[in-house]
Each structure stands twice: as structure tokens, then as C-alpha cells.
View (cartoon, rainbow, N blue to C red):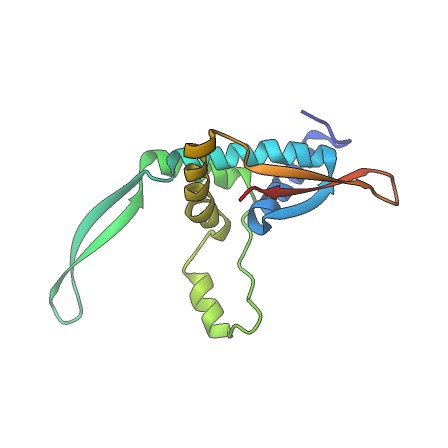
Length: 167
């Protein structure tokens, strides 16, 4: 593990923040050393999600509505494996909140944002896990990120790179 010129708590916070930003935005610009650390960290997160995203439990619950009729609802819950993975991932990333889209009304935004408590975690399990599980069938495990080296930064001559999630 690279020290990146930081003490342990600062280093963990930096990698956690950059991994969260990468998973939320799809790509970020950083130094090469940081990009390599973040790639390893994100790979572990996505592997956890891919290995457990299908573990769900469906239950049928009978309730009575306001008119007194019995209504059967199907509840879908996380299984033990997925719940454990979700909790691990929640400890590995910072939860980022939804941002109001341009041209979106406040009511539409509230309706969309209030439905999801942890948007980054949901994005990992709903978008990335199925996508990379299908990719895993074709190309094997891993290889979720790509690093492009851009050259040196003007101020301090640090080697800069773009790290992105592979499609």
C-alpha cells in the first residue's frame, strides 16, 4: 500500500472520498499513485456487490386497506449475503446525495430523492453489479477501472491521470 505522503487516517479518508466520487461520477482526475490505490479499492467494492446482488428474499404480506379489503403485497428484502455486502460497502464509501437536475422541479426532485435513502449504494447494486456480473461471464473477474496517464501537472510536476469505470 502506498503511503501517499499522508498519515493513516488521512490516507483512508482520501481513498474513501475518491472511490465514492469515482463510483458516483464514473470518472475522476487525480495523480497516478492515488489512481492506482483507488482502482484497487473500487475493485474490492464492485466485487462484493457482484458476488451478492442477486441474494433477495420475496415475502407475500396480507394487509387490510382503508376500505377493509385484504390486499396482498410482495415485499422484496435483502438476503443475508447481500445485507452483509451492503453494510460492508456502506463502511467503505461515503454516501453522496442526489443533486437536483437542471430543469427539474422541486416536487419532482423530492419525489425522486426521498424514495432512496442511500443513492450511491443503490447505484452500486442496481447499475454496476448487474453490468459487471454480465462482463464477468465474458471476460472473467476484475478489471473494472481504466487509468489514462495525462502527463505532469504544472504546479508541482506530479504525474496526473484520469481513472474511469470500464463500460
